[in-house]
Length: 200
Image (cartoon, rainbow, N blue to C red; front, side):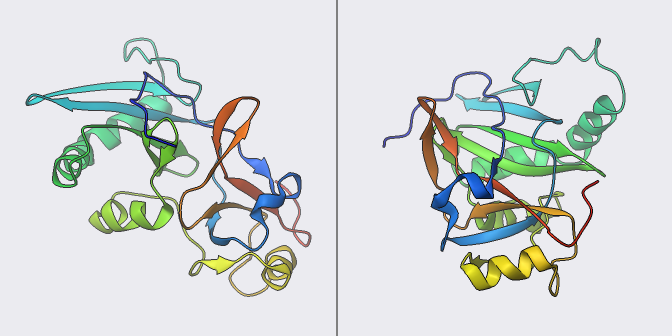
């Protein structure tokens, strides 16, 4: 599937339940500390001919008017813009990405959880960590190293063994994968819920 130019803007996809998608079984995945798929903001950034265009939208794809939004989302947007936006733009130039959407989920703080390069392509978690997380930009939090999601590792996650001490987790393939759902291209992202923890 070829890359397609980004329209403006693209909503953040809802996570699949692990149990609903057989495609997750035996994949090499990152297990991530859970973050919401419905509360955050995105920067839609385009570099062209020395000019940079930046727009901000919510996770549903609604462009945000800075004069009409209120805390806490404005505080998070202002913090990311002040502390990290220049570094994000420099990184785009360095890796020769002319346009992208940067998704920041809000839980305890605003964290960079995805970078969309085209309609059908997101950065892999490892790529995101290497190019953005190592610069100090707050990113999604990986729990341990990538693992194969076989029955043994699934049981460890659900039973809360070792580092798996949270209520639920986001899972993403180590190499980005997408599937077709309702005629749309959707990232193969899922949620696993612990069987030994109470859900908040």
